[in-house]
Image (cartoon, rainbow, N blue to C red):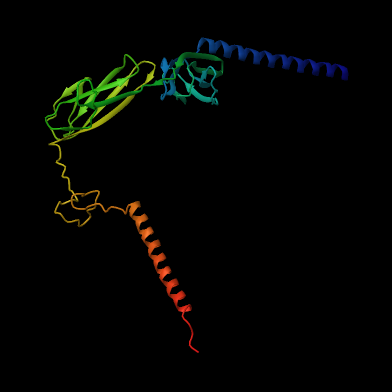
Length: 306
């Protein structure tokens, strides 16, 4: 009797376990079938190329024909570049309310290698679905360009100051060929006009002028440079003040260098004169010594009185 009860108990447990497994399998099968019937429509909008100075980012939209709660990951994968930390996001989508978002990656700089990347949206629950779109990252070179103002058409003489009525020549130079150049000229009244270089004109206003040039070329970072030049009424008269007044008298700050006509240069004693003074000194000393000896001898040779 006990054996029969145990047998019945084991049979019931086995049947219940099979029913549970079948139910779970059926649910999973229905879920997958339902997911396949209601798979998401994923669209990704990303630029074809990102250049130095630009932020890598893309936008996406996830749509569905039914109401579904799901989890997904958005990200960027580039060759030879570090992968950003991926964040699992939860959302609910319906035919009336698609899910939209924007994903931002890193900013391209001059050290970023030229490479190929993918913008990815990955559905991870309740089923898996992945959508991706490729794009390129380009490291741009810098445009080196100079704009200047000149006195002549060939710009052999560059200048930043001009007299009113004098013609001004504007031009630029760069070692990079086939640049696309746009230029503006702003006058002292802050009036800006577009010009094409090389350019020449005669300024009618006195004051400061600004020339701004922007150069572009595919594969290069845009470059903007500017130069200033001024226009004056006339060249200022330069007054020269002389220390020397040529009055025949060496006075004030005059000396033999800045006013030789008033200040005679004192001649240093010549070497011959120095030798003459030395000889005369020696002769005089000798004569005096001889006189002293003479009188001493004469005094010593006089006879004594008894």
